[in-house]
Length: 427
Ligand code: F3S
Image (cartoon, rainbow, N blue to C red):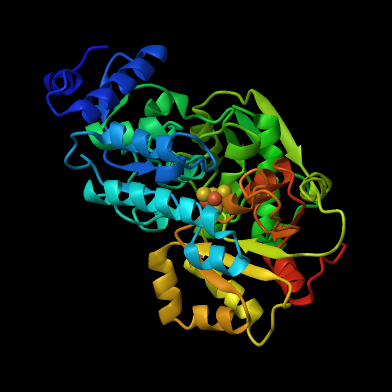
């Protein structure tokens, strides 16, 4: 790769071993993708410290040592940098009765990493919805990890980002660079798969979980072909776009989507496809959406032990909606209900009286932790179980189901009803 003088300096170790390793990694990735040069990024989003080097939370000394080595000698992140949620919020761990040694290990690992990243100037958002805190403009280049985050920035803001890993997003934060390839080129961002809805799909009645199931279904068929949705109402909300997007990155490997007339690179169908013909056409009806939702349910009985809402982290309007649904109700004594969000939105929700309504009903608004990870069976301590879990997000349902956790998937309203009765109502 052809590097600038400043990039050569970093590669030569003039800014310390951490920045040097970061540049070595970016050069290796760039060469693997035939990138000719580096490009400056304006923003990075990191995975949680304890999950940076191994997905889904693995703790211990080696993980801490890797974080330390990765940033050795660095003074500040070079660009504004947000960070994903940590693994487990202390108040939830205590409430669920996780064994103390396990809990202590998680706390020690996350606190250690947080101290290091905060010293380097990370924006301590600890959220997988950083786009509600740090927006981007069209054409900005990012070096961000977390599939849902990358998908949202590419799709809704028209920012340009590849699906980065924990180590490469950290390398971008340390160097302010990413190799120029893939989604950083406009011509690689055109749609390839046309998604049309059958007449029996009524978007006016769609819940967020319907958008989420549609996304999951399309991702499974489109796989790596950027989908273009047409026929969607022009007043789609950010929250609906969030749910339409995220699961494309779970059932498929997609970094973005287009919605004709709504997202910035899809003013028309022709613009979305770059005047090319779709390589794939998909027609989706109610049957496909309903069966996708059914397939995500793996619970064997109608009991519900935990209701997990906010994956990715809930927007303020989602919290408002959940509070409205819980107003005057009481959650079943056997059920824990959590709403995951960022600390900033939790504070706002508290000021608006929404947190009080949810807590009065017996639920919890949790900030800074992943809504699904602490319940994955291979992550919970041996002999400890929190299931069946009910959720309104296909991403959480996917990870829980495939980690062997009994799962119910359905609308937020259905999840709340289950929290109140302790039972999942069959359709
Ligand atoms: Fe966020 Fe965890 Fe879902 S990181 S996107 S709440 S699986």
